[in-house]
Image 1 (cartoon, rainbow over the protein chains, first blue to last red):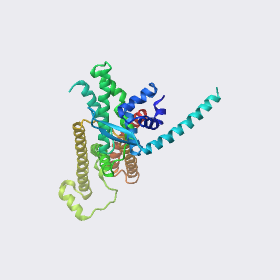
Image 2: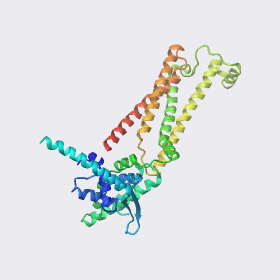
Image 3: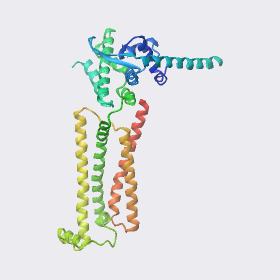
Length: 107
Length: 259
């Protein structure tokens, strides 16, 4: 998938991965690539601005994990984040069904 | 410092030089980037890559520093107003230096015009201008060989006018040297932001047009008296505007490619 297309859905993808399990940035970048089987290959550094923005919006919370050998910033989803994820998933399903219906009708 | 560490540290320096925003957010972004790159490099090592190759791979996957910084800068929490104003002032400082240097160069152009067409072309007031007796006495006391009040005024204007422009040019050079030293100390290369190059192009173009209009007016109305003081400025402002416009267009194209 082209990076420009992916950027529009990055928030949804990050919220979903973090909702499954709290994670730090490197884990999230790897999870996006692995779970999409390499289809989502954004520059990993662009994940952090999105994480900070989501945290600024109150959808994520984060804290330094001092227990690991190298300290890491671990992100977890908030109540507002769960609500936003539900809304964005529903929106994506509507959009995806619509696209599917149009493409299906033309074949 | 090993080559692996040096690669990552150089990348972090490059990223820091491009990040905007409040200091706490920038520091956190940098700390997370450092953690990310070392974790990715460790994983590359575990996968069988050499230390340098693992670091290069980690950096390549993270993305070019300028691109990551651009993404960050678009969404970074706003800086406090005072810090923003201070930063903009620092960004505009080279432009101030260039502007003052341009004034200095216009002094040299005015000097050449004086040699070619006489001091009156550059510094004379409109024909028929009358000067107070006290001023005439003062100018004649400084330039006793002038012979007339208007010639003494011209001699005085020539000396003061050129000196002021040369002084501005020297000040401009000092500012540019200071900026270069600061950037070298901070190991930063000054990439003129779009706003700075746009401001430079707009200011210099406005100056070039305004000064040309004044020069033409002096040529038409005052028989050329004093036209050179405007035209010498326009002669320098126009190329400066073109240079700023080219820098603006190039920076804009580069920014569009990265976005």
